[in-house]
Image 1 (cartoon, rainbow, N blue to C red):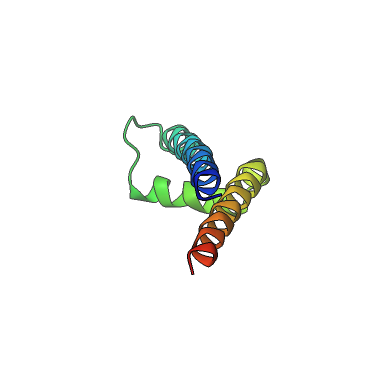
Image 2 (cartoon, rainbow, N blue to C red):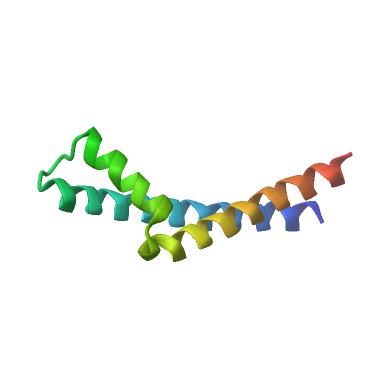
Length: 84
């Protein structure tokens, strides 16, 4: 059982990392587009993070990342409960 939970946690973490980096790359591309510069400044970056929190075109990414994060926390809590 321990090996199964450890494997599941590893798989869910890998999925979480892929989704998180995908979001970060999309946010950077949006900030570059917004600022028109190769290296966007703090203002464009913060505005883009605000877009991520509110914009409808990021809703799917928000839901996916939140769901996988919740699943990861659930697996971690399950492993802790079984250790006690």
